[in-house]
Image (cartoon, helix red, strand yellow):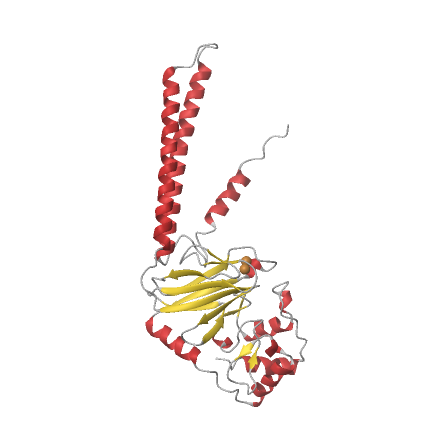
Length: 333
Ligand code: CUA
């Protein structure tokens, strides 16, 4: 029989998996809201309440086995050993029951709304991006959810195609988005900042690149974002941007993307993200790439290179048309 492989690779793999939530932009171990805090408390309790007793139980079993091995063969087991095992079994059962009750309590605590929500945001999962709507403010955007820091926000979660799952670890646990149903979640970001989220249900080839950001703004910053998003972008000024608007129509971008305001006949596509305020976003491709001129150019030229399986086709535009299109998209603020 081959010997077991040296344990360090296994120990390293397990430690890596356990520690990968400690840093980076998407951390389950630094809660920024009451829902995530309740879940972290429960996870900490589970770790402490299982690792310590497991060490004690393993120690007792090892002690009994060693003592048994040292006693003469044929000698019957001591009655105290049986009693110790029964006590160990009873304590284990009590521990499991206590963890079950803690789990139920944490579930109740995490799902309790952290106050009355004054703002409602609809989040709709698509393959493979997030549509974001503010129904009381006539705002439609994608992949970035701005919320006021410190205030409860009501999220209405649904899906346009397959099952997705909304998960922003620093704010709350995951909530599935199931076609034909609306799930509700009230979150509160207690400190301003940007919190990365991720689709947490396998939904197709681009599942791993279906991310989003929740940006918790301080009072004035949120009010000014809301105001800017409610205004329609200015019509493109300058020949290059105006030419880019024509390219947008000629290349049929408008059949998939909506841009409110700047077209007499309207670009009302609903297959891909609404681009009305594209230039205000930080990322494109469902938080896959930072938004800048160079990235936008490469993305439009061949999006499949960055998100294989994406429904957006490549656009083989000339250099001049691409320059114009980018200039137009940069006016969408
Ligand atoms: Cu959407 Cu996974």
